[in-house]
Length: 507
Image 1 (cartoon, rainbow, N blue to C red):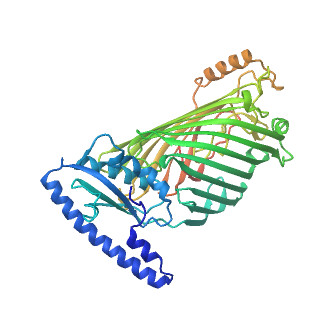
Image 2: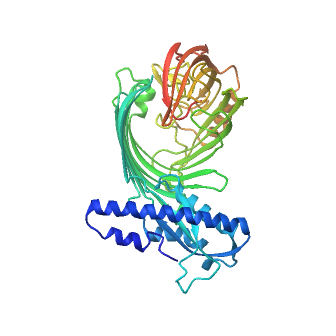
Image 3: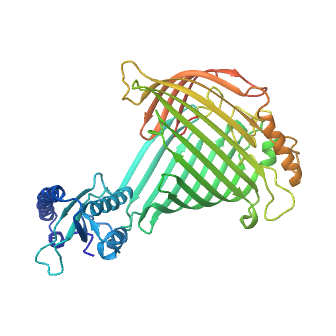
């Protein structure tokens, strides 16, 4: 295989030490490459016009201008399509298709600016090793900047924060990424994270990630602060039909601390340290046209977690599953659309490390429901079980919502701004018959879960309706809504009036 990096001309240009002279010569080289590209495309068009089933052999593939990308990384990507590694010969159409597929994979590594240019030519006729059927492929790329720094502020009903993030791209020449971030806020007082990811086998659809996290979050809806320190490893992959999977292990030390004077007995009982060791699998099938503001398509998502089971240990044990689905339908060519979504989850107590008695769920792990990004019209964690002033979370929940989105009259359908009319609601329940000391055998837990699931359908869900404005920024969705609670249960906290929400996922 020919060198997948620069050809000999470019190598000679780079030997010059004068930066200005080198830049000048690189520009001259790129101009010659462009001229060759135009000529080769003309010859290619002539060939296609004559016979697109012409038998050919791919003799070489060269990637131009990939100065910081490893040769071995590129070779592993392109070697399988070289004719020398194929049992059957290509025709011209097939060769072009295979080269285009490989270049598409190269684009998905996100280390090159789009678009990637491909041109095909005959190899050097002076090379005695070439044959009349040989073709040479040239792939011209432009590498993205190797670093990116972002700073900013975020504000919402629930929190205001400032953040700094640093992204290092293609660190070792094999599409590796390192991402570090830090944020300070009114609720998430501090959060620091770092993650390193790398593709496996030069495959853009399979990545391995190692990460760490440290945070301190004020949870005033439950009269405490949670301190978290942990690490994780994840394997991420995508199937040919676009389904995304993520399998990971995480270990996290959690501390419920900083209790308010008014903290309830439930919160005080969970105060102190705990260690969660868990396996998690996430599956996503997202066919929406624009996830932050979809007008057509659907989403299906599941998140499954097992903690404290078997060799995982830790001092918390549960099986946890969440399901989510959303569908969007357009109304003709007006830009109006209708979206509807459902979410649900269940937390099932398990034994820890082979013990006999399932462990009662802790406030760190139970579901919370209510707020500007899920059930609008309720305060943050305003739905579900409470102990005095505190929202203590639940083990089972179901929520749903529907929205009618209309473009503003003078803004037009192509702008990311919509008028919204919505209705949403949900229920959050603790296990029926859960004992205060947490001592329930496996049979009692199973019976309690059945009764709790049956209770979900009894009576109307807590719900609210409202109107507002939606703005879909490329990095997040912003909403400002006027909400009116319609059904509230005893102890729940509705929120009548204006609310502001920022997030990536909304009900």
